[in-house]
Amino acid sequence: MRFSLRSRMSSLLLLVSVVVFSSGFVVVGGWATSSTGHATTATATHLHLDCSTGDGRCTDIFDSDRIFGHYAGHDEPATLFYSNVPGSGNRNSWQLTLPRDPSATNPLTAGKAYNFQLHIAFWFGMAICDTQSDPNQISTCQPDSDQNIVDPTVSVKHPGTAFLEMQFYPPGWAPFNIGASSGTSCDPTKWCAALNIDSVSDNPVTGQNNNPACAAAAGLEYVNFAFITKNGVPQGPPSPLLANASTFIPNPNKDLFMNSGDTLSVTLHDTKHGLRIDIQDQSSGQSGFMVASAANGFAQVKFDPNGTNCDPASHNLPYDFHPMYSTSSEKTTH
Image 1 (cartoon, rainbow, N blue to C red):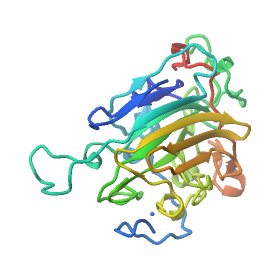
Image 2 (tube, helix red, strand yellow):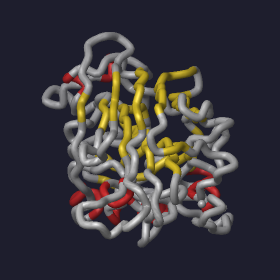
Image 3 (cartoon, rainbow, N blue to C red):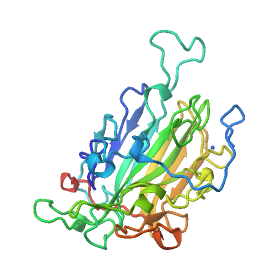
Image 4 (tube, one colour):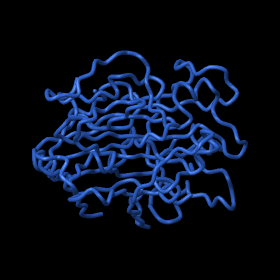
């Protein structure tokens, strides 16, 4: 898949993105919501993240003009991690301290800014197998393997690729939602986190995109989304064809909420049934996790460019999302 620098440079390799203007962010080593606000009622109506609008929670696509018919994206600093050590492309652990905010008094003081004003999220990334995603040339992807490395100057037959962003959302006044006013705060005072897997329904060789029904139902860039919960069970369906308001409404009783200044241990590693994310809040003693598995409701959108519908019965394909590579060398760059 072709991404830009949240994108081109990060495509098909393990990386970490650090929003440098988030003061206090430290990395060491290798919506019923809160009682203070942000209340919304969940419904069963299907919803999905619309990446064609430039939603900041979506991974940028290098050639968004071709996919969407217009530019959609944004820039942000990133730190790229390269290693030839086996396992570096599918397993890593990070120690970090969540950024602090200034005091709530006199918020309009010149020079005073809060994290939610400065960035939507910071995140950790990883290339993921998705056999229904760009470039849609072959039907297989061997997880955790450098056999997936393909020189694009030699062959276009690269396995289908998705991109993981393990996103952390700062506290703020704009409640988490999707649509025109896309707030990304789960709570006025606490942080939350979500596992996002972005895929692209296209074939760059033939120039075909997925059929219009699927583009409308899930987006040409489709996103599997799940908050990190305390028991590892998604709030609602992560699948882009089945997601509803319960998928996107933070729930403080189920989700892992964290305080500014907390020290966290974040681990990404593969399992038999998909990538697992673990967050241990070493300050509060709480923890949460999520596995990108078919059993948890993660799914592909069938690439069906000549189809006339996007019926979930036929086009929602339950799927265990696994890391793509063994290493995170420069050769994993697409």
